[in-house]
Picture 1 (cartoon, rainbow, N blue to C red):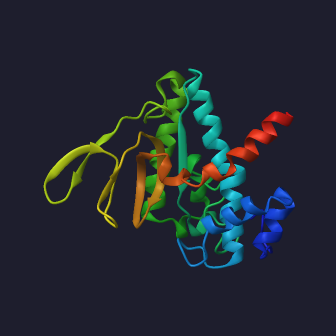
Picture 2: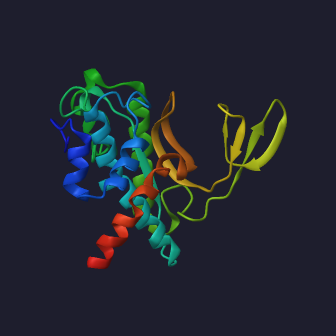
Amino acid sequence: MFVVGLNDTTAFLEAYLGNETALIAAIEAAYPLGVNEIETPYDQISQIFTEYFFQCTQARWANDTASIGIPAWRYYFNASFENTQAYPGLGVYHSSEIGLVFGSYQYTPANTTTQEYALSQSMMGAWAKFAKNPAGGPGWNQVGTGGAGAVLVGAADIELGGVYMSANASVISGAWDLGLWGNRYEAMGSGITVIDQYEVDYRCGLYEAVYDAVNAVG
């Protein structure tokens, strides 16, 4: 919603990064058109904006906080419903989960889906749990404490590792400490799924130098 009407990715990036042509080229290459529902320049700009301003900064904040011994929990919301859309086709946007957290999505019950109801119930429970006992967390691993899980490799072998990637039959190691609310790939989740942060943060390294520069100025 913050970039509605924008359709020139290079111009958008130049407005924030100036003449950093190598970085701009790397960012554009990391968000190719025709892949992962990025069909238009607007989709491309929207995903870049989401990660650059919200997702990757949140990841850095959470991980830096955990690294100095302050407990931190992080979630990633990935579900959209007709009765929580500010306008049709908006998708998942900043604060779009608030209606589910407080149950206010029910003001338009005719459009409520089974997934929406179940996801809202689960989220309200987690928020209440955290409010009652912040030190105990909302119900999943603290950032930086998730351990590797058992995964099926091939037809029968079990190994400790990460997410089994069927595309190239490899195992990626990682720590499970990011709570995912909603959809993961083609699965429409109605509760919390704990995943490796890298699954959604794999492009965040592109922006580290920019964040470092901003911190230096501050």
